[in-house]
Image (cartoon, rainbow, N blue to C red; front, side, top):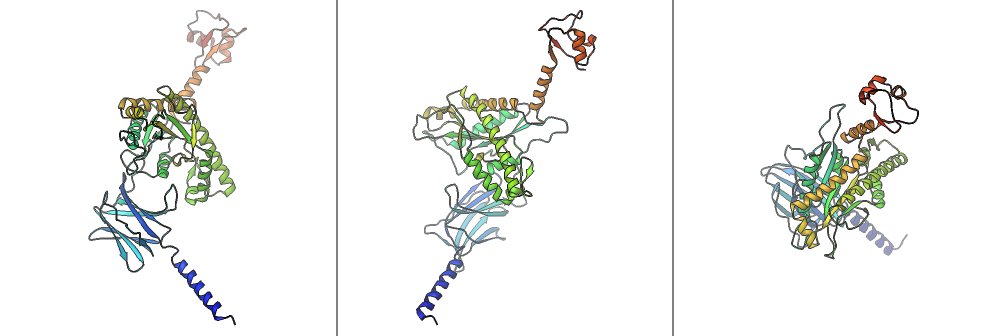
Length: 443
């Protein structure tokens, strides 16, 4: 028989294990933030670790109740102020072990919630989204449906960086980046919409915050051919100046590929028109690599055109396209670029960014680069593709006379009569000259 001291240590050890298991999903509530988005109100609860929770609705008066199991509020915790769908927020204890947060509703709302793991310099978070009762989340504007046989518009998703609680960089005179990016995005959309064969879609059209992943998700939902994120750069040196264009780094693409392959919801989605959900891991990885490779190649090509166009209206910060692991550029099947319009921390550039005329020049230059890219590489079925095909055919309907050619042999070669060929070129007879260009009528 083992000695009593050993049995005492065994019991204490088992108790410690049971205590740890009971606290595995307990957390400290360290903060609560609320802001209104375009179609809902979002509350984010900051936590010290993962947590079990229960969310339910109560009426008379309308309220949403959130119970956090085995959790407690940090010292100095304060409930956030009201806003959006909320007229008030209360926090307190529920029983002996739980923390409770009550959202008093200004109007009827239905909740959605999800947990976020640590990332992007933030810890564990619980997100509660409150949508108007009876309403669906605001859909992304899609390109208009095109009748069979007609050319479709190229869809450009335009993302105004920052917004809402996130002002972005702040200029020397107090200009918020979020306001500049929205103004440039709106101007760019107006120019895109006025371009035959193009349609613009804004990820945000007001001063509200959108998480980074949702920005490129909106572009995918809109079936965009290109995603452009608009920003205004910042640096500690106020003399830094010039526009720049960025694409996703290989490291960022690798990280995103791993996330897609590990996430069943992602794999069930379409990547380049192919679902990965029913593919084994090796085939899914190959298909994703192919999609990402094509997307990154297209992203780099359009970025080169945009950088060149921006260089024609002012200085660029670098003479080449730059690469970084920006989250908004991680779509595996939508070519994506990020444009830093200027350095908002440079007083001279900040002043220019505040003028509508300069913002219009920036938007026009970005569109110029985008248009040049799609003229060279038009998506199938688009008006740009049709125009390129018409140009190709027009070029093919010209013939340069070579030595030994006669009008009759040229006509026979192109399947038209000699009389038709003479009429198309207003020829008084059948004589031709070497090097002469003849128009070939439709056969």
